[in-house]
Length: 383
Ligand code: SF4
Ligand code: SF4
Image 1: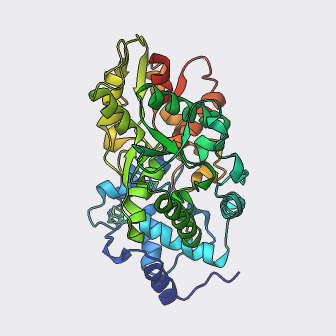
Image 2: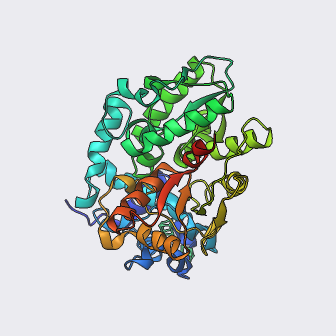
């Protein structure tokens, strides 16, 4: 394909596809100093922004797919360049032209699965609620306290189904009147939007919104920070406004209200990893920590890079579906940090993080050194 697109066309397309003016960048390079990619290889957001400024973006270049949308560069950029929106804009161009480098090709199968079955695995829609069998989980009805939206990974992935089960057990123990929508639930669409597929995002969002309106949903509890982010900050683009609560916030509230009581001892050294989309993107840092601090006997330790400085696991921005070379996985660095601090368990609150850390644990032969848990999996042992 001819990639020598005229300068003006690229700039106009970036604007048209929702990119922010890249001309504000004055090439200070602060973005590159904090970007996690530079821990494992050379990568320059500064350079990508420079190329976009002059309309020289090479849309077939794998570099435009690297950004995990972790948000760390945006915290330090003095010119508010909005790197994530710019990368989404150039990816929309690449998707529009059907240009996918080798490592990015799995996104095409994911898109087919989302279109056919509403989930990235292409698993039957009818199996979406299978995880809940035998758990006394009801179908959502209007008037219930909340809809629980587990999301695709918790509904289909064998490891993450355990988190859905743990969540249901915790909500049941607290006497929460909640329900699920099972096969009427679709992928939230956050990650596919980050790959530049705006049409698929809209299709999924509209299907979810329709089913929520049809069922009279007002409040939605989510397990994934990616669902949280898109429901809270992006679905309002469709002129709707539901109350969105992350499970860590909801459990914290249940504990404060005395509905959930944690009496058993949990004598373990635990480290908490802030997921990018819960922390940096949505400012939820204290709720999961407050829950952990309420557990008798638990010793909470912190990464040196915590809260707003948390090191991304590498799975955001659609990279959960992309082949990442072993040498490029910054999750390995994060797990190394946890082990060095003597943590027996790494606890987090994001299905992408759990998936990625579990892989790293096996790849690094840490099976007997550290365990990876979702917050709800710790709590289910205490009720
Ligand atoms: S931090 Fe902002 S202004 Fe500085 S090089 Fe990066 S994008 Fe440009
Ligand atoms: S959002 Fe994160 S991964 Fe993307 S360029 Fe910025 S720091 Fe790097």
